[in-house]
Length: 265
Image (cartoon, rainbow, N blue to C red; front, top):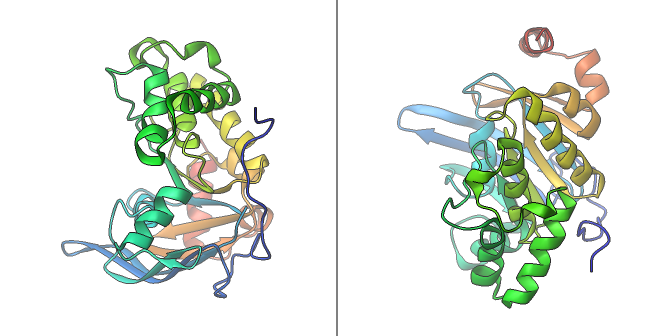
């Protein structure tokens, strides 16, 4: 039985954030359009293995589109995205690297309402990874314990609170044992009293060494977790810096205004 969250040893790329060609996740001059609207505009970013990136910015700035393109839920129109050196081009190698490396947690929990929590967690490992049901159940039990709700295993989603459902969603992603976790505003659909419990789980996961990209407006959480803050506006990366620098001395007027507005609440 596991005694910690699964982490594969960081390599020399760990902690790098410059566009230098050695990172585990690499974006080069990425553009994404929805009709005439450009959601991503010449985005370049490198993320090292084990690094924690928090992406923030105003609504419509391209944050969610960025991580959806990394997970290939959206296909980028120009530029290049690669994970572990494999270009995300829709081919078999790209599908394999996504299946074996990337987990994602959404704003909405997206649990199957007609399946028990156990079945929600074991479905992916059994069907996509070919695990025996007993091994998949062991994974489910382990990760439900890690997100602190092991007693919910036989219940159904409607019997859980929003915070509990989001923790199940995190456990479900972890059951695929990814190397990268993507979080798309994971607390935005939660009542205020439930936000802290979900952020605590994500913060623990970050402390385990998991590579993470988190889109969030929870700036207190970001300051504790992030290696690098990324600020986006109008589809562009406007500013990127470690949290201490980002919050104390933002370079751009647009970022300063955003932080003043969001930290006021």
